[in-house]
Image (cartoon, rainbow, N blue to C red):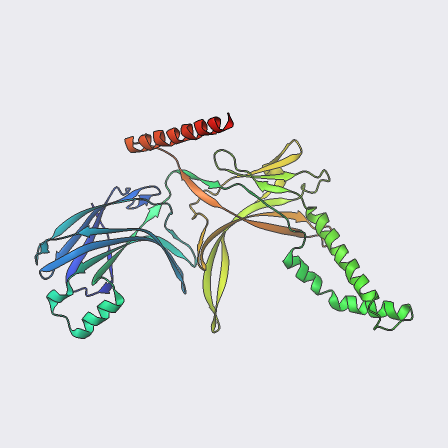
Length: 384
């Protein structure tokens, strides 16, 4: 058993000392993705204690400076009918039937980890508490003694996987459309000059709508010339690798394009008296499109290699969490620069199987195959 460092956080800590020993950890003292928490709870009462339950809460914590998200995973109650005697050490074996689906991660603004809270729910009457203390516990409903343990989980051997999805390009992009708003004073000036040139007052609103329409159509033509509303999609390979499929328009548009992905933290900061949501790129990888793509019929297929570092999967809770994006940079024929379009993508992690399946897993697989056969039989019966 590997002892863990306790963090007292609630209740009367003078009644008992609580410890946690874990088994199944790696040589580095951490679990791997897909492992289960196993070990024992150690309780050393400082006075005789009558326990009703030992309550365990396993949670995933995404901790920021101003906001913390708690994702509840598993809750277990241990009945303890016996009286715990002062000075003795009691051990309670624990095995939580829950496989860790996310890793721990320490970024720049967020700290993510697994937390096991151990509550000793005892009868407060045995300690002759004051009336105020008893009433406060009735209203709060909290167990009387709590200790917290941080559980560190890493990825182990595996690979990132991405979910398939379409990558649409909207006809009107809000961010670029706002840029056109800066042309409004120019449009008014041209409209005034045009109205004077044809001998009409500025109050004749016929010229102005026409000029606005011309500018808007011109802006759409520029946008179409950049991306040409090209259909794109994420179609991962069987091993989960990130494959981007783009229709080839045959005009060499993608020869100088760049493609890549980025990993982003979402967190909350203080902006004066107000709180504001922020995002920060922690990892970015970019590739020349021609180096990672190949022609497949009427499509280009770009396969992007995953990073060699461990990063969390996609997941945002409230205003904190992690996001992955894929982006495409295409030359802008007007400005001469690069026009970027981004899409959020769903990235997860899949572990490599290093051990043969257990009897329990084989039994579950047989049940799933049986269900599939039953569905196939019902489908064939309905078609007759």
